[in-house]
Length: 100
Image 1: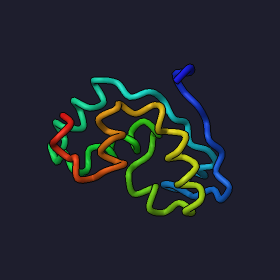
Image 2: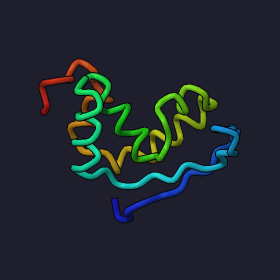
Image 3: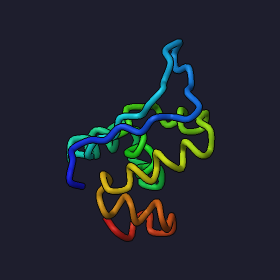
Image 4: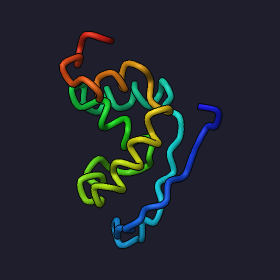
């Protein structure tokens, strides 16, 4: 992406730990992000979703609580910020260990 980050406003804000979440700030993923996520949990099948949540600055469970249209808009905005391998796995979950 041309930018290092982007902000996506939520049509239906949430309360996360008592704090209103009105927008999601998305940033580029780094190698450190991937390394830390793999240290925490080396399950490759969930890595793309966990990485997407990390670059959005939220816990993966926040996506489950969001309105579906907000999730779709945030996910679409996050796509250019994800590494190709993670993006391929999101598009085709059968590639869990094929592209790494």
